[in-house]
Image 1 (cartoon, one colour):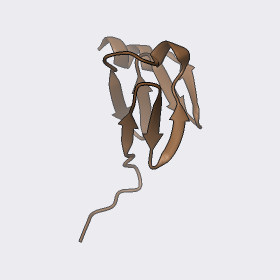
Image 2: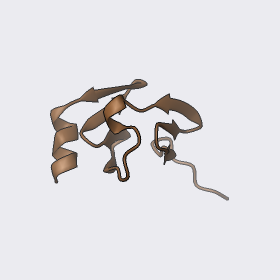
Image 3: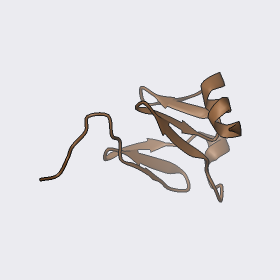
Length: 70
């Protein structure tokens, strides 16, 4: 039996895009073709390099900046 949690998201990052639970999203221009990414997932929220991914869009938020710096 495999434990399936509703809040778990499967994230795969590529050079110019990412997959979240099998759905393809383009990364913002500033994040494309970078060597490394800072990725954090907290309470079903995704933070990548100072951006927060929410509702299929990337937004610059204070919470995302906090996760980038700390």
